[in-house]
Length: 114
Image (cartoon, rainbow, N blue to C red; front, side, top):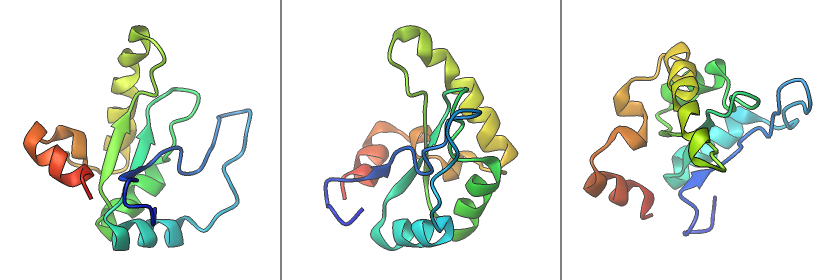
């Protein structure tokens, strides 16, 4: 996140449901570092990931860390996963103002153009 070209930390915990446990990291520290650097965290909507958890999404919101909901799509069919990301965000009490990809393009460009 110290690299000025990094705007979004993807796969923040690396979890793969029922296959790979989340990384053994201090997510609070990661979130605080993201906040300090103006970096966003990805909420990966792929049903086998759903990384961030709802609990982590809520913690990010409380710290003021912005979230990017991503489908992790590798084909156009994967774009349908967005609904799972939105559901996960709602479980974490996120509102549109907490999610960068709810913003108009001009504002989004400013947010990711650190």
